[in-house]
Length: 303
Image (cartoon, rainbow, N blue to C red; front, side, top):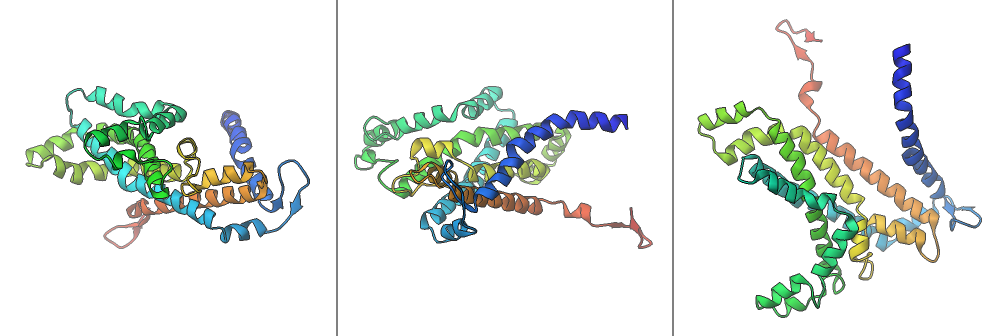
């Protein structure tokens, strides 16, 4: 009993904080989502009206689509690039530690700093991107307003900044995982004549399956919750074409109407989406071999 009491005492502070910071606000949002409330005045119970109005709101569905586009880009572009960098760096290239540090620097930088840096890169008049394009002879392309001229162009510009920021994070996860693999496996593959790509595909990547699952979870859920970079670069514009669920929730709750109930409904929709995606990823990476009972020669299952 003394051991159980000690465990409970050590877990209590973090459990209390988790309940206060995560669980309680979720339940509060559930209650607010059924209200017509501006955050200050009287509360009016409207039932499922907030959810029904969201179902017919084109801006909400555009924001949901944009959030999925960010998640898909993270999975299809960011993670493969991070894996490639980790494989190359773990192959003991020259100045390996230097490159690992350089690629990880954007992760530790404040999002405000990175957002302001990319705003200057994309600036139409003095931005580095347009300057390079004009110097290369693409004068028409070099006068593009990357963050305000077209919704598709602005979304792609925001995507590039988001993907660039977290490539180093996933690269470090893969890099650490590769370094934890026994060198004997790579030596045996080298003796058998396997090259870099064959070794990476047949040995390294399969052994990194647990880390890939974690990285995929962080990439997808993090992309669905992205807020700061979109807020700094476009704030959902132009004409709400780069809105994601988090910025739409903020604008709904802080708008002149101050629709806290509707904003809470968006928050609940985001939570449900993240939970569904998290569960799906876990199911895809579940080790089904461990779930199957092993049988002895006599046919009896081994416990």
